[in-house]
Length: 452
Image (cartoon, rainbow, N blue to C red; front, side, top):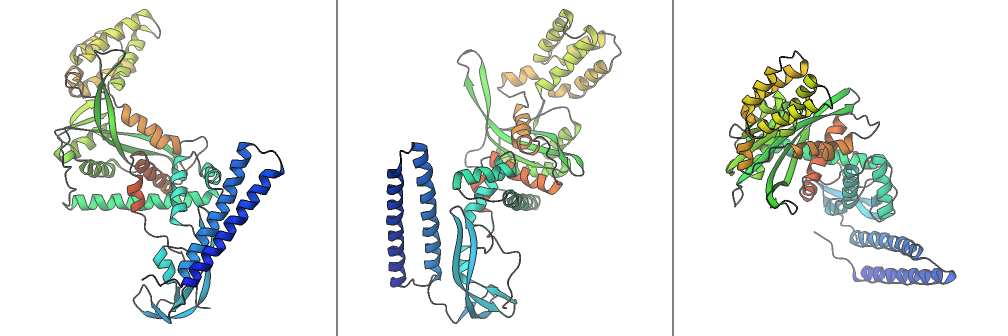
């Protein structure tokens, strides 16, 4: 329960802050009168003074809340009644700067630690940061190219200087929280506790999976990424006869893990999005066998589509092997085969490739690829039904969700750090940031003081 703040303490606080505000106003007035100032200079100087005033206001507010006379004893988190020890100052870094707050502490003989009810009530973690600064550190740590950049941007935005490792700690800590929440959701789903279906069933849900290599201290590791999304259709302004199908409401899951674990993550995320009640499920990917094994195991109802552009690459490689790169014959032969593939006539493409009679790795690969995936290449049927046939969503996701942060020049990650940052990026890019923030537990001290 919040103790009653004495009226005289409130009055003193208001008086002190009013005087401070008047002093700052006079300082600003005198400063601007000293010499001609640019707007940029006035903006920067006003911001600095405002930040100092905000720091004083926040410190004073905390001190006011912690100032009532301490009770002789309080109840520890372990449930024991503990005696008052003394007043002790706690330092915590906020978005407005360093705060110094004196509050009563109690000594718990059972836990053998000091206990401050004010800390429990407000979420103050001595020697650490506030929840607001922790959020900014994690957000910038995930968004910026590096933790150094995150610290630099934070200083520009808040005038608070931190070391880059503080951004690393906040980002990786959030990644662990989110990964634990995902694993809990997977465990619940596999125990039969399914998420509720959306009020309006989705007509069509898309799934896509891919992977990219991340450089770690134990070598290059594949980080597998999955996407769940819907689509919206529109008419091209330049070509009114052409229907544009655009991805919408994309969410992601990703990890350095095996296909089975990623499959469970993807299934749980898809279930959260409403895949169990969807009219159709579409899975798009390249030719990697692990992708289609994952889809067949976890989404047997899905319509499977091999990405059009990957299939096209095999046709072009075969054309180059037979007729040479950049020749008219290469161009003509490839375009004829692509026209057939566009219409879903994979048998004709296969016959034409075999008819070249050439022994070349590109020919062998094209025959194997087309034979293996021909049931996933009914492109004319898919287009007629308004279904996407490209895996651009997941390829773009690999680049902007993972690669843009984890594959900067010279970066070498420890595996745990890469996984944690990647997890934060999937929630951030999936527009689940507020949900992520709601999952954070209060910050806790790594160690406690003794009574001495």
